[in-house]
Length: 301
Image 1: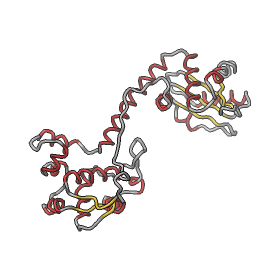
Image 2: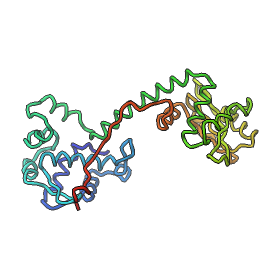
Image 3: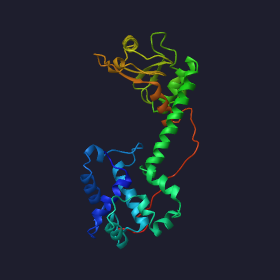
Image 4: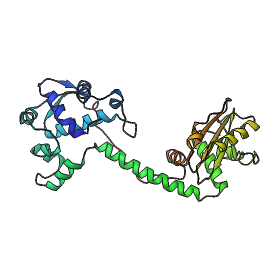
């Protein structure tokens, strides 16, 4: 299990206790070994996929140490313990956490918090186990989940024709079909054979993808998938996308045709996620920019 950034603090400072210069890569490797992390845990990413969880937590432990004056950078990605750090280490704390750091005047000054703010200390020490990025991403995912559910409710209230056009518009935004105008001409041209639309696979129209778009409430089972594959065969088609506002049963997802027909199943949750990713029926409410120090500007080696 990946430790939170506060649990990393004491082992981190202990590694620096020899007074020698240490690098980020070396320290991360030693800490990963100390905590017995598997390769999978060491390479696990934050929900955004931008940064790895464990190195991110180590980096935040280091950041708090710098604000407390417990370590200093010697050059880019290299650092060593300070006299203040040695002093804290010599006190033989059972653990080093935010409560310990808040006893250091320089840390209190740099974080803009008062030493007598006991309620805040209790909240920080008891509840904060995630780094700021993790807290931000966790709340972002909650907002996204709520938006996804709202979208799905809206979609289920639309007419079948509106839903079919929504699906085509989404596929165009994903890079299929060229223009909305060209893609829209295909709707309804296939007759009532289990196919609701046809869209170009690429902008040149070298191949086509057949679509079935159903606003269902119950789960879609294997028989419906088999019917769709049969409809594709009737058109001489090899590629199809089945999109529903509900979900698929396990046997529907596990079913694979014996011929070379390829189909993609998209359920309601995936549909809403794709609409958010490709900005269909949603608009940007607020934008935050997360910035970091540009070490090249300062000429760090």
